[in-house]
Image 1 (cartoon, rainbow, N blue to C red):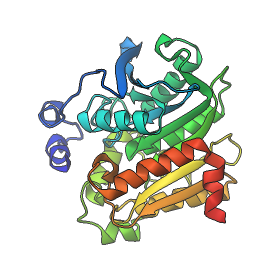
Image 2: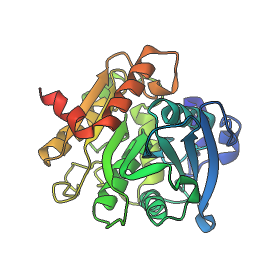
Image 3: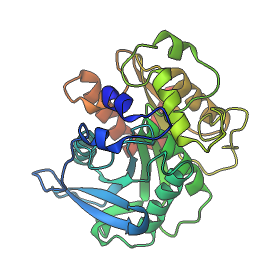
Image 4: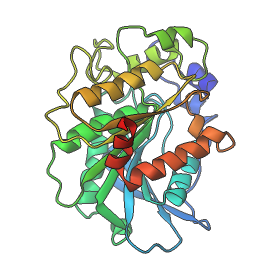
Length: 314
């Protein structure tokens, strides 16, 4: 996929979506032995929709709800991209939980903060009872945001906006931050040491930030460097307990650790779970042992977010 991203990014700051479509294999909504999926339109005017994953086996009580934001550097992929469809189906079955994967608008056609607005609007859509498909199956008071890479960035900013919004039924009680995409003007040690690592090299991430950020911004923009010189005050916001998954071979790992440290300084519950041999996007490969461990840790976090984070202090 790195090759496809490089081919799709034009020198003039636009992307060639036709080229990416050759590599972005799609999956239709379907019903399997463990999970049923269906697509629900939120706002057709901006192509805002969600893919809903519901376990098909019976459970004794309503399930937790996970709002999932896919990665792709804010510019590529979607809930129906096969790796994300596979991952969300797995989470729904093995947590178990109802998972909502959000199709937000993509950069550079739609720059920051469009993606954050789309994310919050999906939360409002569900809270407002506009999705009949989730009625009676979920416990809205046990809702989580989650995302990988750029989606981890979205999950943070949606949680920030959600913390300032008065929901009628929905309550965000956890943030599942999977190798989140943060950065800054500084070049960290891990970015330099792992300059040839798969997927998230600093040269590639610099391009992604330029596609995403408001024109004229630098990487110390609060969307990028959330605890940097221009960052928002997290301490004053109702922000949920957070688990941050980090890979030892991910060039972004220094920024991810700083993210967790910043949340703790702001008085929030947070914990890093690090897999020293994992690359960026390791969780998408069920054959690697870290992928199974990741699902187990997510399951434990969903069961008890505060207890999970507190265990790190013991």
